[in-house]
Image 1 (tube, rainbow, N blue to C red):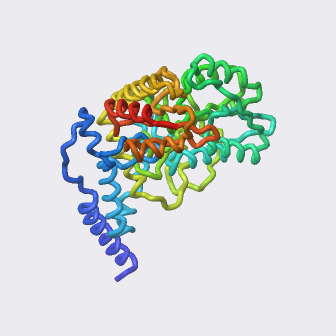
Image 2: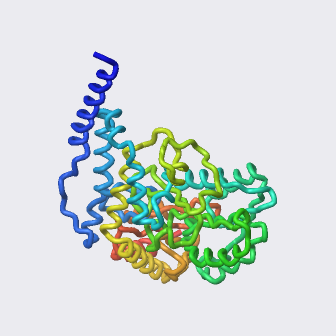
Image 3: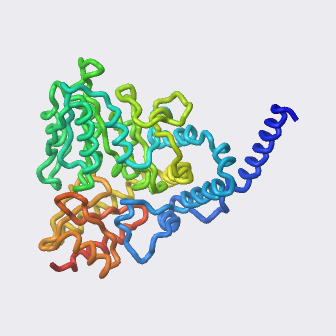
Length: 419
């Protein structure tokens, strides 16, 4: 047999194996009763302990059934015949980008896939081209990973980083004051404005579209290499706020898909519209010629998780992003109103839904946040979290796995806590 003949036989065998493997590993799972208009039906998709009020589920998502099934389907395929399954799914990321932009807005080429928000911020700030005579503006409220990524960029480029407070009392924060403070801090040489959509430290939601509009005025007349780029850590708005990323007006947004979107753990993305301002940091394995593909790190990943992002976006689409955002806002507003009525509680998050989202933070007189979290779980079966900052608050995150009635249970439980 000639070499060509042997190759033909091997190719035919591979094709047959792939076809057989595809038939047994990519078949749709058996149908289950699911009504996307019924919140009880949505909650039933999650294997979360039903005896607990799950107000920390946004920190690292539990997998809803469609995502769980997709992960298992891909895992079985990879375990049964890794080579064939990889050939079969050789270009799924291009398809995933199309699914993603149906939710994000924009076009598929604007989406790079990552493993987390932190990875996205690292890729962004490690690749941005800055001069030592330019500077970076951020806030005092951003998460440590954001500040660290900016600090590493400063060491690499020589461009200094300045931090400014956007509010003094988070509960009293307003859109006008936030925008005005940022505007006053922007210098003629400011190249990057780095902010967070929803602060995990306080629950304050920044008016990103208004900030973008203000920056458009600042950038009028500036040369392209001197424009102030708006870079956003979007993880606590993504999946919780009814606004496509493409309509925020930012240049870049980094987010995990394993929080409010309830996507596969260890997945995220970096969305951008100004990719020519940075260089890739990690070589890509993609042969596609779009920015998103070039900036997606190469190497082998947890593909069974990454490929299952499709099901997370599909589930949110079926339920409705507007309905999800409304569900979260209704619960958060009910919770904030109840907490504010407790004499021993100081509400930290703004009551106004326009400057808040799903995160609700508060402080209890004479009680440390960690103590309150432990007491709520042990005595009342309420799962809360602590803000991971120097100033620690008790933090709640109502979502699609909780109910408005449970917010009354939480308020009652907090009211029973004693220092």
